[in-house]
Length: 241
Image (cartoon, rainbow, N blue to C red):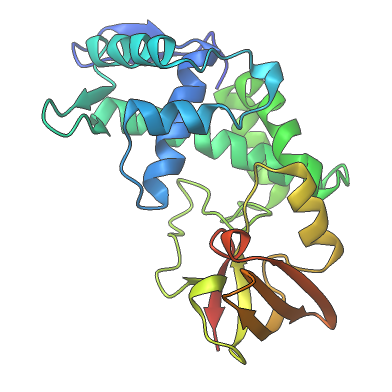
C-alpha cells in the first residue's frame, strides 16, 4: 500500500496511512495470525525485528503513542483490563491490504527475479509501501493469483487459510514424518540456514532425534540432515504425515 493511499476510518472519513502505520498494522496482523495476544510490549518487541530501513521507533512510549493514535483513528481497540490490542473492522481491512501486498512482493521477488529466499522478506518490506491498487492487480495476474507466500503464509484475499493441522516441529515426537508448512521469516541468518538445509515449505522430512536436555532437535529434510535449538523448532510449522 502506498503511503498516498487513502482509506476509511470509523467515521467514514478518508485518512492517509503513513509507512509507520502500515508497519504497525502488518505487525499486529502477524502476531494475531499465530494466535498471539497483542499488547504494547509484545508489539514493541515484534517491531524490533523489522528491517532498520523501516525507521521505526520501538521504545514503549513511542509504540504506545502510535497505538493510541491508531485507536483515535478507528483502526484498533485497547481493552482497558488486559491491555490487549485488537483490530476494528477498518483496521483489519487495512491490515489485510498491507499484508497481501507484502506477501505478493515476496512472491514477486522470488518468482520473477530469483531473489534468494532468505533475502525476499526484507526486500518485500521495501516494496510493499509502493504497490498501488492498480499494480497489485497486475502482479496478481502475472503471478497467477498465488495463495501463499514463499514462506508458507496465506496471502489475504486468496481464500487460503492458516493450516490448522500444522504443529510446531518441537511439539512433534521423534521419528515423526512431516511436510514443512511454514517457516519463520524475520531472521536472515536463520532463513539462510533453513534454505541451505531444504527446510522450506512443501519439503518432506523426519525427526531423527529430540534432545530436551541439550535443547536440540535433529531432522532430515529432503535428504539433508540439520540440527537446531528447540526454540527454533517452535517457529517451524509442519504437517505430520
